[in-house]
Amino acid sequence: MKIFLTLIFLHVAFYCSNPALAQKAYEMISYKTTIAGKATTLQLADGYLLASKVKILSKLGNQEFSPSADEPDAKGDLRFDPVNSKNNKDPV
Image 1 (tube, rainbow, N blue to C red):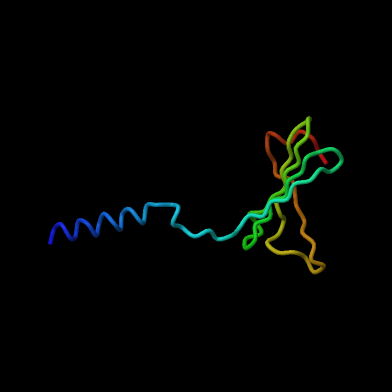
Image 2 (cartoon, rainbow, N blue to C red):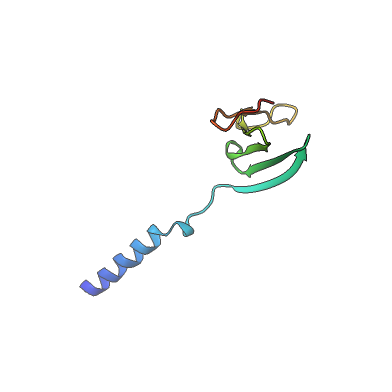
């Protein structure tokens, strides 16, 4: 009986500690483009808007923006505000 309980404990410990088995709450959809000569990436979190972000890469520094609200406004528009970071050297 001890061997059976030990095997059950090991199976539970293995499956509970494996992060690959955890469900994701949202899917990331990534768009890449160039705006005014700067590489821009939009990562849209489908299912959890607050995990979305916009990154603008330039020679002067990288900028990152995050959504200001957890849902679009009445027109369906999203607003992204700058994230304060050491890498944000180039104001938009």
